[in-house]
Length: 206
Image (cartoon, rainbow, N blue to C red):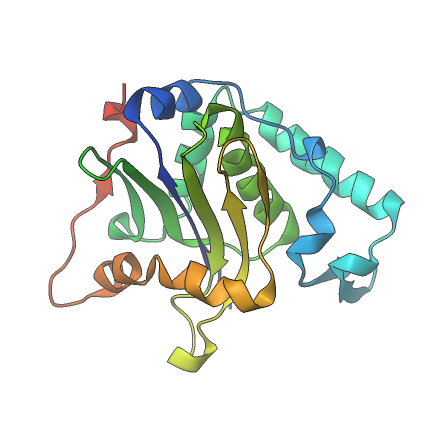
């Protein structure tokens, strides 16, 4: 049975810069060299092994595959839509912007469960760096909000975005709070009583 985990990004950014990023070309995964810091175990040949133990040849092959996917996205808006399309129910996707707090939140509750898609997601959101002002920042996470018991809902990985153009993977002791930043949204998506509506403002962010 497939059990895709969630992917979310939250940015504190002025709307004009957000729109600039959404309409800009997608960054390629090969732009960054720290992907082993994401952690996790993935298929390598007939076995699974830690990402940190992947050889340079293996990583180069993964980067090439991710870049091929990213090159098919005409801009970041298109790329984020591809993330939202992974939602297994209309209310399991979210994209919104709040003018009062300058917060943009987007993601899918049922995104993916494989290395290539994980890297693709993080490459998309890390590309926002060149559009962040010195006091802008954000966080992106891969987190299991859905499957198993509550104690099994853990953060797979998280990336700190900003301030400014910087980005990098969080250490294990920081990741829990990163996943928790999206817990209220996930709870609302999973609520059976409120039957939450689909929230997707990507097309209206112009």
